Image 1 (cartoon, rainbow, N blue to C red):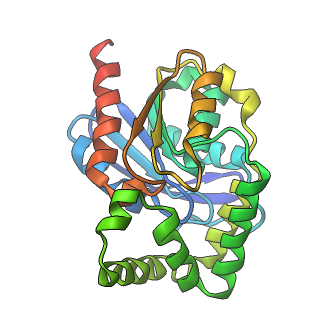
Image 2 (cartoon, rainbow, N blue to C red):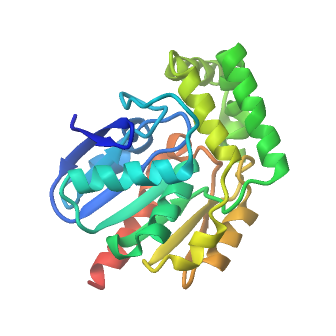
Length: 268
């Protein structure tokens, strides 16, 4: 995979496909590929897809200090530019829905459209308390964090449908995904705690779809309603599922983003 130097970091990113640019920004603890693989497969025949691994994830290397949203914005823009994208569609999930929104507010002239799932404008104390718990757990016993997220990140229908064996399998898989990445996850969770992009949101000019998961317990739907209120002309759609929709129901997650891309590109 190609790499680009941004500030003190070396950002690893995936690039594939052909056509207009589409930059995909992953959530806390994920990578470009793990967060977006089904969507990449679905659109690579008509978009040039760039999916960076941001600080704390994948093979990206930095100085190891605190992660700030503005640093992640620079990494997203740096990867897009290094891949040759002057303008691009943009999609983000969770923390990196925040980053995508901030990028669109920072450099609005570069963003053709924006889709943001499970994002928020500002972290409030109860959210910070939750994210601090993640940090404490990942630093002491990442399996406990994996178990916690199995019922906080999933929607009601998924929780009702899972067997005891499926809960164990999911927790084991997520524990393995965290293996060796505890420090990166903790640093990204600290970035979650520090979020406040309120002043950037009115500067977003791209056609924007805010996607809210009806059963999101981590960043509940009122946060997405606030985003839609603060961003000029933004649309809002609510879909079944939880905060972890990209992993809980990849097909639904992919469909809502491709539908927005189809509507935007049809008008160009």
